[in-house]
Amino acid sequence: MFIAVVGCTHGELDLIYSTLEKIEEENKIKVDLLICCGDFQSVRYNVDNECLNVPAKYKKEQNDFVDYFTGKKKAKILTIFVGGNHEAMNVLKQLYYGGWVAPNIYYLGYSSVHNINNFRICSLSGIYKKYSFFKKYYESYPYTDITKVSAYHIRKYEIEKLKLLKNNVDIVVTHDWPNNIEKHGDVHDLLRRKYHFQSDVYNNTLGNPHTEILLNKLKPYFWFASHLHVKYSALYIHNDQKQYTRFLSLDKAQEYKHFIQILNIVKKKDSSIHLNFDHVPKVLLPEPGSKMDIQNDAQPNHDLENCPNTKTNTCNNNDHHNDDSINLDYDHEKALYELDRNMQLDQEKNDEKNVDKSADKNVCNKDISLEDKNQHNNNNNNNDDDDDGVDIQADTSTNVADQNNNSVPTNLKENEEESLNDQNENKDEETSQDENITDEKKKKKFYLCYDIEWLAIVKANHHLISASCDKDYNLETPTYPTKEDFDFVENKLKELDNKITIKGKDYYCVNGYNTPNYKNLQEQRQLFLKRFELEELSIYTESELNFFAEEMKTLEKMNTDIHNEEDKNECTIEA
Image (cartoon, rainbow, N blue to C red; front, top):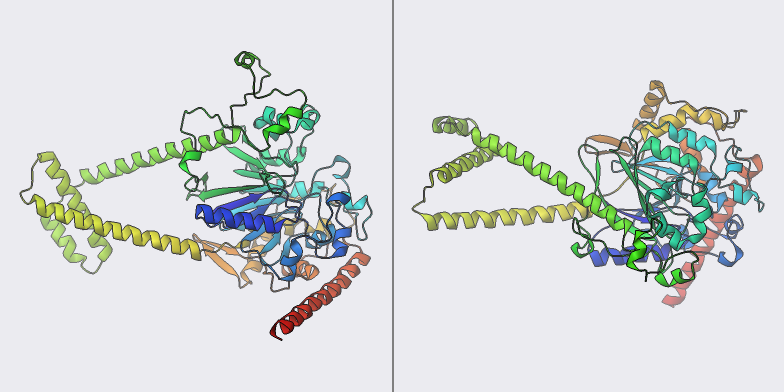
């Protein structure tokens, strides 16, 4: 599964999708999923722009998202995203539990877990601010300069729900970093490129301390983030010294910035996840034990000359004896690649040893009489698979016997011709299998599905944030769902018509962007609540709900006006 990870989107969808197309053409791959780590800026019209907290010099009248919302363009890749600290909050607030904002573009919600082809993805929107962490969602439209900022701050209730997760999580997507994650990478190189991070790093205030707890609790294989506009990778080894999390942060979507990363992730039968490097040219991969002399190129070197208290590239060899010196020849990201590659090589060697052992066992069991073989073949004439298996065993046993006796066949040329024919047939079979595999990859679809455990957690704790509850959900302790909650969710999912089966497991796709219409965000939320018998949330005021209803009428009128203009243009072209 090829996953593309993007940093802060900032509404630059055309740049992102065009870059993906170029990468696919150059490397002959097909990206299956696009993950955007915040600041998506789903601005539809001028009111959304007013609810967007962005400095005036960066604010646009409209960004690329408008074309994808109106239908002029369509995302060719399934795109999912979390909210950041520069969002149109009047849009995302309507989709508290997630929903479609455009065809093939899905907002993951304030906090959630989803399944995509057996990959379990956990998400958390917003950023951490201590003064808002214990507050309720009091912000509502129309937003002030203060409320449009605090509206995207993470609340304690979201963290506590995610802490309840017991099943393994493969990927976590957030906007800001977990606290102290920078210390598990090349922090000297980070400070060399972002020297204004020094005080936060030294005071342990860089990142979210509560997501650091989630990191140790969930132990995901990947953690993707952005927010700080820098490409940075780290390897977090957990306390058991066996599990580790690969952290990756990317820059903002802008030309000549490192804002995108392609990962080929493979999930094996034992549910373990491995990085596959088949799509990476061998020239770019370091050989085991080789010296890595390529610098981390997340930022041009000419920016380093103006940075205070940093060492330049032209340092003497004697300087390397100091403990505070920065090893500029060390590339932490490439080291992570080498680590994964070595682990995969070791596993392949172990697999080869297991295959050799099983082959030795088959050879040891070759003492079978010809009469038994013939009788076995006569009894299984109708079973083609069993006949093939017997023939293979007979051939291997005779070949081994010939090798042990050092006997030379008299009809050597005939045997060589037969072996050549067999090799050609095997090659034809392999090519046909490869063609079938490529066809399967082309036909293979990736589905965004509900996660049963997460839905059960929502069912068990939704009452804390429902409109009929007077309690402060941040001061309450969420509980893990009971068996009745799980049974309720499973029964509700079975009523849906969108079940798919992947590797023997049943999954249920989220409601599509056609039914209901992705433009009606309030209807999407109400459908979700009705489907699982949940009350309306307490985060909305009555005036705000009325505004959402009026907003839908405005968007419908805007949509009809766009279609009328398109019809007029078509008529003028025909004339």
